[in-house]
Length: 223
Image (cartoon, rainbow, N blue to C red; front, side, top):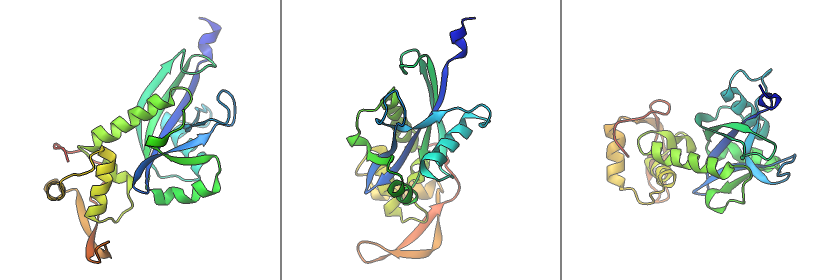
């Protein structure tokens, strides 16, 4: 066995998505070391074999280190590997999709100059194959979001049905979902339940608040 076979680079990269001012945005950090020092990149880091008991544990740790927060929705996305993705040598990255409401990120973003939340349509050039990883995450959100409650990870609970529909529209890239059809499917699929409080909406009316009946779930029809 070649000695180089023991020196593969093993990392985790996390695509942290949120909604900021009605736009889908991703958390980026400035790289501290070469290669691509000071360039904005996805949140990530090396797997620490003595500390992390799984790739998901690595993802949780690097999110905590970069944002100061835990408790993100986290889903394994794909594995990216090969000799050309990292100038330091043959590497493998286990990529994860993470979702969070913007309300959780506002404080960490203001405290940490390295952490930026950037609209996905206004990204800088990303290093390594991070552009490819981000594209895979957006495809997962838009694809799986059409038949699951995945987009709800971008919104605080409780929410109004109008707020939830807007989140789905942004996540799916479909700006004008039919209101009555959307609400009918929510009812038919038994996805949400009302909570006691109500909120005044932009029209000055009292709107019922809701929450998901359970965690992220899939169903047999598209929204």
